[in-house]
Length: 347
Ligand SMILES: *Cc1c(COP(=O)(O)O)cnc(C)c1O
Image 1 (cartoon, protein in one colour):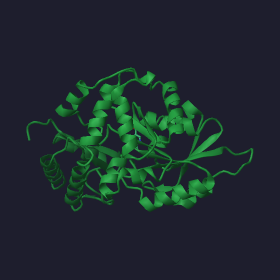
Image 2 (cartoon, protein in one colour):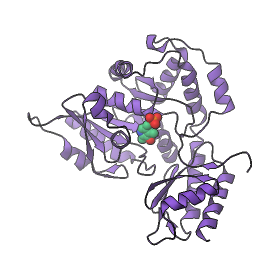
Image 3 (cartoon, protein in one colour):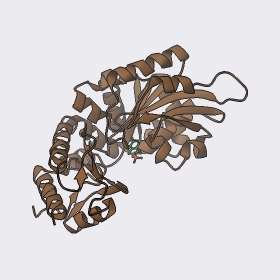
Image 4 (tube, protein in one colour):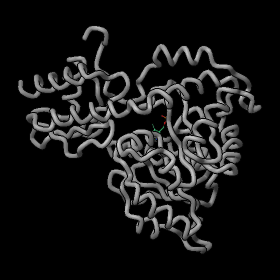
């Protein structure tokens, strides 16, 4: 237990590139990607498009930029995108849909990212000069603020059917789609078939240092390439980054099951400790820890006490902590974390 300074359960974004990944990055062949000449980026885009059985893909610097590109391509001034409540694009992106692209986002009621398609249906605007035009449906799978909850396959199918019937494209923020795929055993290409376009993030659980990818049909991706440049995301010899991303999806995809297993172990051990409970059983790599009414510590104090014991996680509300498992978290660290919770809560 000496080689780590603390157990870092704050986020799956804290992962560091492994030696093998660094070596793949060092050896990547590169070119000017704005000119379409970076072989490593082209290889990554082709690989992901083929894996998802879709036309084309576009490497972008971040998940936020993937979202903002999709918002810009589907929308524009005078349009509205119906987004699941509490989604990243609505909650965590600095208001950029409005700020950068003049798009109004309208949250659709959902519980941890699970929606009722009737709410999407009811949100569609009719043709009337008073109304914005409904430009897209937007969902998030897995749902970040919903504790990594998976949007059920059949629910996604119903939304896609509604989209087809009403001529409204469906976009999926799939920053953690690989987690959903591993947890359900449903391959990426099947999820990919239930939306018009989607993104995947390499720098979350997959463990690459940088990058996300947008996937969709050729016409859509072509527009995304233009929007990416306009938003400042056109990079040059970024094949060094794409090589890390390609390594991550080839080598760290299946191991996400280990993160899910560790999340389960943590949740099971914590659920009966005094003062806390686990209201939502983790479905992927995120564990929401609820502090009971009348407990001896608030979530904030518990976080401080854990930090003194070298366990880092976030309080995401007055009575809720979040722990995220990832590539850098071992079985020993989970065991240690459980002991520290026990010590603090039984003192
Ligand atoms: C993290 C995340 C993003 C944004 O990714 P960044 O790379 O941090 O910009 C977008 N959507 C979801 C669901 C996320 O969890």
